[in-house]
Amino acid sequence: QVQLVESGGGLVQPGGSLRLSCAASGSIGRIYAMGWYRQAPGKQRELVAAITSGGSTNYADSVKGRFTISRDNAKNTVYLQMNSLKPDDTAVYYCNGSVYALNVGYLEVWGQGTLVTVSS
Image (cartoon, rainbow, N blue to C red; front, side, top):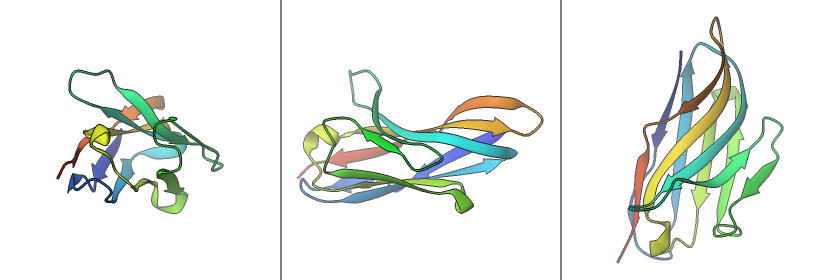
């Protein structure tokens, strides 16, 4: 199987920055698109940013110009650099990956989530 583990969440003041990381491990054949989603209390999970294996990216309108998604294919890791954070960015952030797992096949894998709280 394949696991995704996020790190980097925490408490930050409005206007501050955080960098989230998501590392994939396990029986990885290939990782295709990876993305970051978030879910705020009482709201549905939403896509924040995604990146293909070739490096093409797309962002939610609410984070364009403030967040940057990147990946290191050699490390099977995806990052989310979050700048100019706002209280509305407060949510649990989840990593997602489309993966070909050895001896299993194609999977959509989710991490356990990391909490980001933006508050003064």
